[in-house]
Amino acid sequence: MHEMTSSRPYLLRALHEWILDNDCTPYLLVNAGYPGCSVPEGFIEDGQIVFNLSPGAVRDLNMDNQWVIFNGRFGGVARQVSVPLPAVMAIYARENGQGMVFELEPSTTPPDDTPPPQDEKPAAGRPALKVVK
Image 1: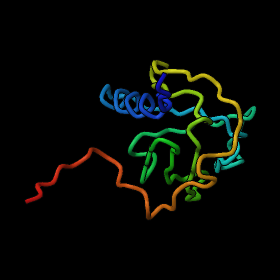
Image 2: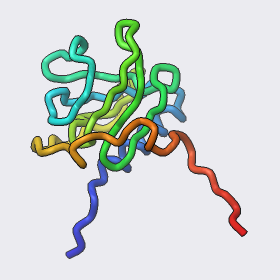
Image 3: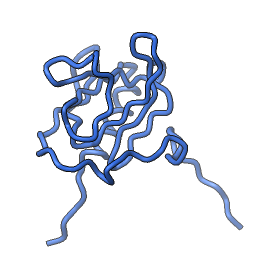
C-alpha cells in the first residue's frame, strides 16, 4: 500500500480560502506547547493560542506542508509566528464557528527542526503562471 502525505496542510489551506471567500474571519487554534512552536507566550491560555489569519491581521502568511508562518502584532509589538502543522488543532470562522477540528498528533521533533527563514519562503497568494518559450 502506498503511504500518502498528511492531508492536514491541504485541508488547512482550502478551509482558509473558503472562510475568506465567504467574507468571514479565519481563526487558527494552536497547541502552543507543541515542540517547535514560536508564539507570543503572553497570549497563551490553557496551553492553546488562537490567531486571526485574516489578510488585515497578518502579513506574509505562508502555509506550506510543514509550517504556518506569518508576521503579526501582539500588544503593539511586531512578531514572527511559526507553527508546525501538527500543532494546528482547528481552523474556523469567527462569525459562525464553521470550520474543522483536526486530530491531535503526538508530539515529535518539529519538521526539519526549524522553520524556513522568512526570505526563503514562497510568496503567499494565488499561484501565477509564466509562459516559457
